[in-house]
View 1 (cartoon, rainbow, N blue to C red):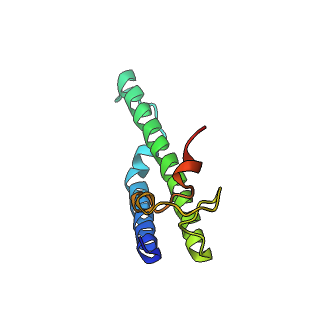
View 2: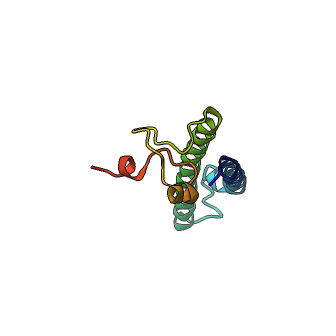
View 3: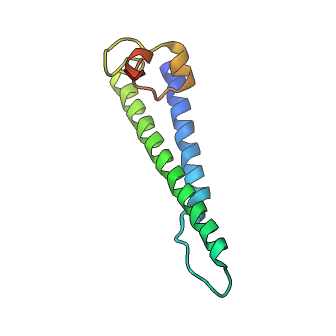
Length: 110
């Protein structure tokens, strides 16, 4: 994967995350208590959906931070190299996720 392909993939994914945020903004809104129109179970369901939407937003925020870090590594000429050991990250790993910052060895627990 070339640096240009990586940059394009990272920017496209960032745009996709922005669109997902826009679409899901309604699901993250506070759940209001309207006892006359919404029963207790419906409110509990709405609160569960809100919690799931907030968790998804948190995951998108973390992914957006990984993308920003990868774009910075691209600008610095450090993309494709493990931030822990300095070894080259495998091409297949970068193709799968151009935002990875560590080689397989350094990313593996233990």
